[in-house]
Image (cartoon, rainbow, N blue to C red; front, side, top):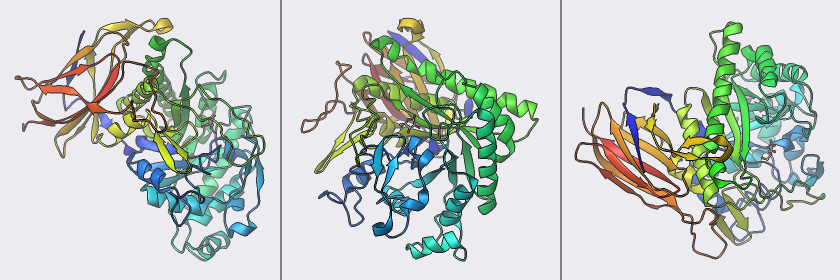
Length: 497
Ligand code: AHR
């Protein structure tokens, strides 16, 4: 089968915010304990941080990592996690029925971020706590010495403020499962007060209001509209979350990009509407701060233990193609999505799994790294002419899903091409209307004949990128051959104008 992708470097959606390649670390299961922090492991450094995890995460080049939750944050008291370890309390964690030992807290997280080469994106508890404690956390993190909480940070070993710029106002407050869950208007007031108080402490910070936890919620969009209308002038982003699952029909599952586009279109429409009725010159953007595949392991009961095995999802090849489609969609919506966090990073619905003496790199790691390493500049409009395939209830869906970035400083473009059809290979002819392609600088493809193939402990990885078949044509176009199904990332150098 054949598809065409027509591009023009002048036809773009806007600059791609690199923060769409961010991540999420929650106190949940073995994510922090035994994942990021594992003092008992031979692979831990002097701080107790897993060096193999740090090295693999560094390759993901994440601008931000969101922390400490998630559902966890809504009953977490950050004050339990600072100061001498010996005096930190063990607490029951309401969200995951686990025991939180508090041996890893704010200061450890900031130190860990430095080692990973990322910056903290901090969430505050607006479930069981409020504006006061949220403001005090900003004081602890961002103020210079001279006040109570800032001096505590200094006493805990950090003279220089952490200068944390990005803050989440609670988490999924629309969900009945959330500690402190309240109707939209009540959360709107809580979040507005917290935003004002936090920004009063540090005028340079940006805040994210917690939008709907998913498109399946009965209050989806109504909830978000109420929040936006009340808090518009005091917030900077609204969050969106989605976890994808395969209900047993891979053709349907592999068209998941259609759903992701739809959610982003919903938010773009709502944001434009609220901006219009305010009326306001200000723009609020989307922070898609939880996204991933999650359907195989939903165990959420930690039975009051420390670091229980929860949400330990094993990812296969088809799951990786869904992750590629999330990233393609974020790139295509560069004008509205400024932050996105893969949820999560290690052991808990993560691209990485640990055991005491080793690390397993899962399939979903690869689309992230392939794109994070190569995406730069502006998102180009993708004019696609593609054959369709039967995607179950989703009907006829184009086989080709694509995103393209163009960096005018280096005159390179990075194309992310996914063939969603499980049966038919696809040849994609790419042409720039205004430029010729001078050469291919990188071409890698993720493919496997078995959709369920997964990397396993102590075995050679089977889902891992290989060289792709991508050639410049005599006319200065590009031809890429995509196996069925597959994801290719091809970087090209454009010829001089
Ligand atoms: O990432 C796992 C959980 O999913 C998060 O704690 C919560 O925000 C979402 O429901």
